[in-house]
Image (cartoon, rainbow, N blue to C red; front, side, top):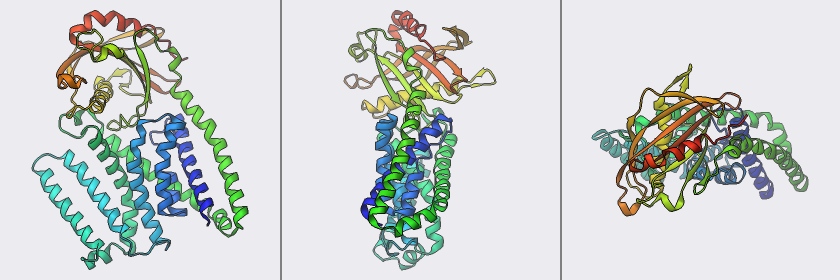
Length: 448
């Protein structure tokens, strides 16, 4: 197959991944399914093109889905592409079985798996695991240069290759978690893990990769006959056929991504617009990785006062988390711990972005019992209290502070979305700002 056709097919696989993610989100499926394109590229085109697709999916998601922070997924997607592409290349005889990429694939799996487990376990287990991980990685390096012949041969039998392909699912999850921990904050640490849904997010990530892999095989087997015909076509006809396929996929991509953005932004027209507050919109899927939730954050802050300790807007927030599915409310009962996790993870992520070397946020006080109130025709839960956290101002040394405020939580069954309105400021200024924050809450116009 010529290079032009391969590049065009790679773009088709990228667009297919974005379509599946868009449709999945619209249908409120808790998985992306955007790894389908990576697996298809590894099977049909080979490792290098699988890596290309893995890089392009998060980049194109920035443009089509407005998911800027999700660009950090490139690392985990590339890891999946390297491993899946290496195995399929060897099995399809596109690459020599002696390739060092087999050891590199195992090395990446052990490396990122070790990082995650070290961050999760405590002393002395984490030290013991680090030593074991280093020994295994050293053995893999020696095998790369043919120093451990038995290991070299064992890694290249059919059972090891199939195992490696399946383990690529874990390697993807390990890389996803490791990059988040290294770049932002350790959500697996003892002080942070209670504010995460580790079992749920791990299950969601593994399930996402597994379902994507199964879908990719189904698509491949279904289109196998067409693929064989494509390979034997004259070059010009093959390029035209692939271009037509691309146009069809684009014709599906555009309306699906528009529907995705419309669903996410349906609450946007009803947000408060009050000076001196400034609005920012952020897709939060990657930020909420420790929870496994998907959605959007519409947050307001006052740029001139946010970082000024003498201003009543110091460390002040007003925003809405617009989250896929039903969170924190079950059988008409409120589970406040689930609600707090969204704000705590968000705050720690924000602090890490602003250079805090050890972000920390926790509940300080709660004013119970929580009340049910009606805000502009929508009934929900009103929670008031405070959190202990760090300032995001480097000049103050990321000092420990207390922020006071409230949440308003409501579920919108028609849209299958949970809205969490949050508002707070530095404890000393809360009394001065409370009425302004409440007026912003009551100025929200909810989607119909």
